Length: 389
Image 1 (spheres, rainbow, N blue to C red):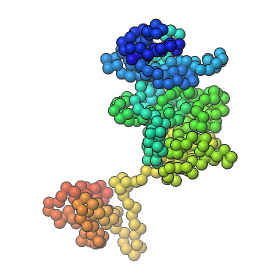
Image 2 (cartoon, one colour; image 1 turned 30 degrees about the horizontal axis):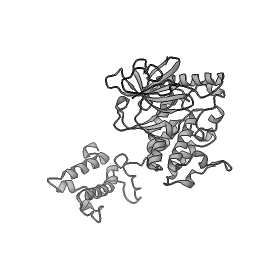
Image 3 (cartoon, helix red, strand yellow; image 1 turned 45 degrees about the horizontal axis):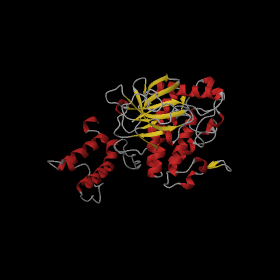
Image 4 (cartoon, rainbow, N blue to C red; image 1 turned 180 degrees about the horizontal axis):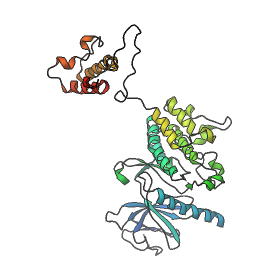
């Protein structure tokens, strides 16, 4: 199927292999390589089409954006054209990142402006919410861990996205190999509303842009900052947790968010505190960078035994303190004995702290099992060998 991109065409669908529209005569191949397949939708600035790149042997899919603003008035048209051109510039600067669509081409043909970008195969988070229902804490944490580094990258390039919402976050299909061999990552799309955050640009009021409910208070008056994107990501998370529009999660009379009152799945106080700080209305009470949010998320990760040994017990004053390795030995032997019993299905000794069961299994067994060897290796990582002291 070939799809005619002429906005005035009365019958845009054409048979495969057609080079000129049978209805209006418009050339169907853009730049003699990009063939439209079907319409994907229409926004305020134009239409989006699924296409194939016939210049490559595999004929990979791509996305064509056609500049076709719905706005009226010379000033508004100029602004729309500026934003369309701006998206091409941002994608050219940022599109080498594995989680941002790559810009493939930007040109004009027969009086129309076109932008061609990488096609991301998968469903967006709004579609996922509709099919699977509300998200739980583990899913929200995964989204934050996946997207915050992308936002950090975008902000380091002095760009504010300004339109973060579930529809603009696509979960790449696991079978689609991304740039750099990356699979399955969330991809941030639609940089048509993005803004270059130069010093002079941040100091003046700009265009009011963004999606209702997801845009921060300062963005609603044209003063978006980096923290505005964090606000939108936080609102996206509470929408995914509740499946309710952000307007229904905010008590305008009290000026507070009430998203906890309608949760389908409870969340921890730790995650709740992070989300609350992301969606705080005053900028100075909100996270100022994606790195700050990532730091708080990382601080909540549980410590693993293999990374951090247990805290030593304070020695009794009347007893001479033992070397550090001796202090840990009994505790570690107890935990390793319990671990061994889980693997072998044998009962755990009643008194693991007795001298007869402490650290002597390897000496008694002339042919220790593989499990015993591995447990002894773990123990030596914490206590060190006798040769080290």
